[in-house]
Image 1 (cartoon, rainbow, N blue to C red):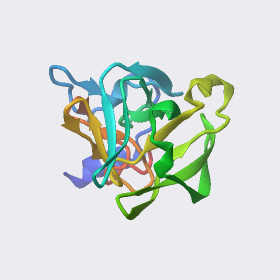
Image 2: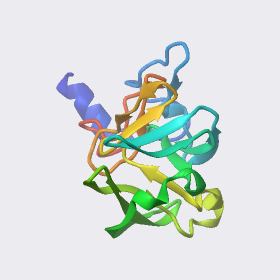
Image 3: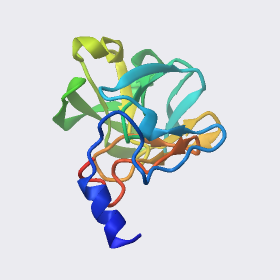
Image 4: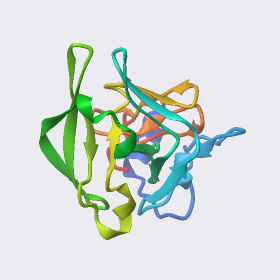
Length: 181
């Protein structure tokens, strides 16, 4: 990539009116992360979602939610009722999202292995995101996550929890040079 394009990306600020000039054009069956809203929107996921730790299924559901936010791949939230709570362990730390509120973290103990800080939830999300209560999300870079028959790739960067699939056109937040998005 040219230095000029790198600099343009670093200085670009989203106005909500159009995709940036460097955004990939979505192909058939794809969505552009640049068409997702800010503030984020919550939608149902009709497909089967599965999360696996080692050889243990942590969750399998057809009742997941996805949060869509400009420049990020969807973050998938799974109903707590469909999560095998016997494998959950409280993890240290917390974080705050300007939209959703205060998150707490979870580890998973499965198959004799501890998968540390692999998921989070909002116990009392802000009113606009109340439907995320009683839902957990997991990092696809730390556990094996499946959206239908496709194994999910993690969103780039170590903090983000987006689920990257072949259905997305990017680039996505977390890629090199995306710090200003």
